[in-house]
Length: 589
Image 1 (cartoon, helix red, strand yellow):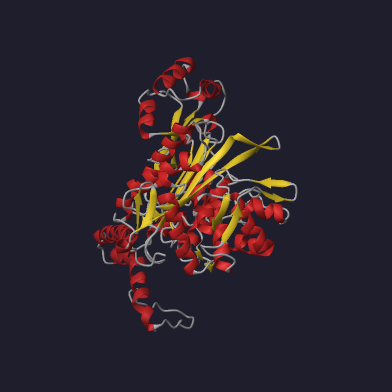
Image 2 (spheres, one colour):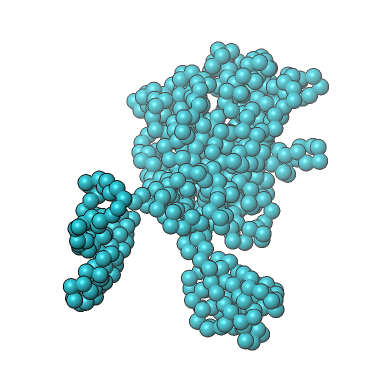
């Protein structure tokens, strides 16, 4: 009979032994030895080993825990994806990228603010507490403060405390006061570009402007820890806002709108709507101040539409620069009498029709082309649909219900259709970039996968560029001239409908420009559009209220855009422009 050995492995058993895989045998043996260490120590009369074993086990457990924690921290700091790890650590965290301009200048960012909460059951002297809080936090509402202090449960008194305000309230050492952090969107440039940038709510969602248009992209950039650039150049934006406000105040206007774009990419370099407002005091804004007039306001634009009519005539071959139009007398269309504001009372070439802004001449051309041709070109120029810009505020035009001869005559000089400035600027881009309609965009680099279409030929585009330049040199746009920048453009003026009748005291004056206007169609080129809404001064025409601002803007932003000053093919002699053969620009007609 064998003697049982308590130290033998495996222990004797009357049951069949269970087979253990070789790879796990040493682990099982270690566990068994640790479990029976106390029995072995007692059998061998060595109780001190029991204490050492227990200390060893406890130390081993602590070491294992700390090693795991250290490895996890190192992985989070060095290897884990920043945005994903942040979401996992705090699912409610607001992650929204900084908005910057095309050169990296900050437009919007996130700063931690605090919500002020009070539990009135823990406030010893409610009246004294109210007075002290109001003293260090003047903008808190008395009514809200008293309502919470006189209640029975913890409520928020005021959101959006800055760190300085939070510290001031905290230093009062009042009972029942607590703070909760809030990640809030702030706009360091204040009112600058506010219609363009828009706003985001406290939940981290865009609600207007670029904040809404690019909401998903901005959040994705925030998750990735990078900035989100817009197309604007804050230097151009500043000049545009400054000159637009000056023009509006000088003319006593009700409102004004301005934009600068790259005609080849469609990028908006500056966009302004006047008057502006304080985004923190939106309720106190004057009427119409919160409206982005560029994308949402409708206007009958007046004579700036003559560029579209003339371009369609040239592109279809219905007219050339020497085609004659009888403007010696008023044009009768049914029982309607069409006249010219600056009547020449003579037969004019198409060039003279444009330079003298003849309603009669463009009406005759539009009627001759017919409704199908006019509707086709207006459609291709984007005048019959909302401008395809990313802003959700982009409004659809108010289109004519019928296209008879009277309507065609009106459309030829910018009446009978109400469009947004965004539509007009995109259409002018197509006339001046080689004939391609390129959607406007607030995204740096232009729209993603834009639907570009050829609207007019390159030859027509070059002709229009030359014609617009002539209009500044010796036509109605002379006040838009900027030395050496070869500005071209077209004036526009239109009376507004008031009580069912057109009222000359309620008018808009505008100027659509491009610079430099010379060179090949591929040359770097920028569009400027200024519209002054209901100027109080006289005359109210675009050549007086809008063109001067265009010239000043071009003059100031040219260095930012890298446009060089030089003489062009035109020089002025005794008030009339004549061509200079020795300075003829490459590609100009």
